[in-house]
Amino acid sequence: MTVDGFKLLADAHDHLLAAVRGVPADAWGDPTPCSEWTVRQVLNHARLDQQALVIQITGVAPATDPFEPLDATADDPVAELAAVLEAAAAAWESRRDEESVPTPMGPMPAGTGAAAAALDAAIHAWDIARATGQDLPLTEEMAGGLEDIAARIVDFVRDSFGKYAPALVLAEGAGRAEKLLAFTGRDPHWSRSSR
Image (cartoon, rainbow, N blue to C red):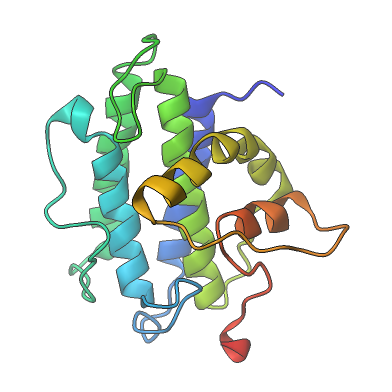
């Protein structure tokens, strides 16, 4: 399956924005599938991650460590996120035709780097939607598009930086989205009521 990393990134960014727009005003402090973080912290992590993934293109570092996200939001968290996503997408686009772009995970084609950013955005969109009871699943189509990049980078990031929880084993017959979530250390059946 040939995947357009730039389209995948645009779709994942839209998905993340939709999830953040759908957060109820009283749910920002709720727990998430990322057991140590609230909804606010997952949002901040996702936003900072998009900046960190293009740091070697833009030369602009995130304001704080993505893995120590503040448990606070801006006055308009949707607008803040939208601005970051727009800048990140533009950074990848500026290198569209390059076969070797520097990234925190090593050099890779720009389309592959965009796909890596898409994986991050899509997974955290699911975290936020799931934590706040939104009907905004990770679709089978999007999961299918993310399978290749997940296979390329998740174990590397897990082994090198310890930034993904161990992969979970699922029963036979699990769908693509369930498998992708489990591979990134998430329980695809996590719910607010079962936490």
